[in-house]
Image (cartoon, rainbow, N blue to C red; front, side):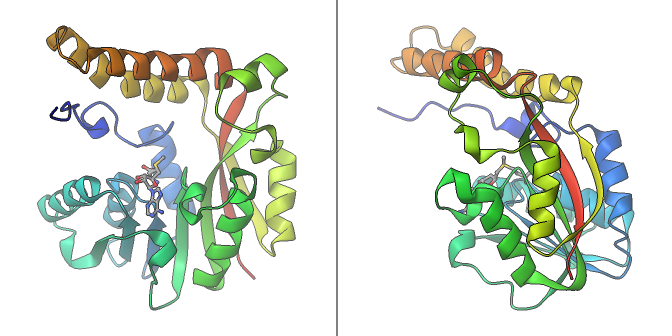
Length: 250
Ligand SMILES: C[S@@+](CC[C@H](N)C(=O)[O-])C[C@H]1O[C@@H](n2cnc3c(N)ncnc32)[C@H](O)[C@@H]1O
């Protein structure tokens, strides 16, 4: 049976996460990138990294992701936007990848899982890995989950996120400081950003189901879409937040 051709997520959303264009621009300004080398770990189709380089014409960048199709799309966009000579976009598993230099700025946005291990250790692993990559006083932009409110037992049951994977916002910032960083700034995705992202996430499946009602894959795709909707509406909506922390390494 051939694989169903579902449209890539970047057809329906700008970023692979709950992030408005306005917030992205503000986060990028806060990184003060002029003349710096910025590395985006688990960059996906690298829209954030490309915008960062557009905003700072003397900056250079590296993006790494194991998704070949996303990196190919990122590369095509870099070429179209005249950024290809300032960015290296690499297909690799981060766990077997090396940068080969120090970074002035590291971005790990919605991607602490790339370092592997128990989900409860993801934030610690990301904070430690970024320390290894960063030059002294370099900056880390960490987009990480936190509990906006304590999840109920029913909500925890409804989503694939263990309670101890996320912290309160204050505890997340303390945790970063315990890893040697200084806290510079925090913002969080708002409900509209979450809804735009989650709605976009579901659209390609629904379009495919409308176009392929008799496909042998239809039950699987419907099940996938329904599972995602359950995680969102019975699990994390309004409960799990995404914090954008800007941190400074020692
Ligand atoms: C939620 S997406 C975030 C993408 C991007 N940071 C953004 O905000 O648009 C997580 C990304 O991590 C990538 N990823 C997961 N495990 C990885 C690994 N071991 N090595 C490299 N990339 C990985 C996925 O392919 C995906 O693009």
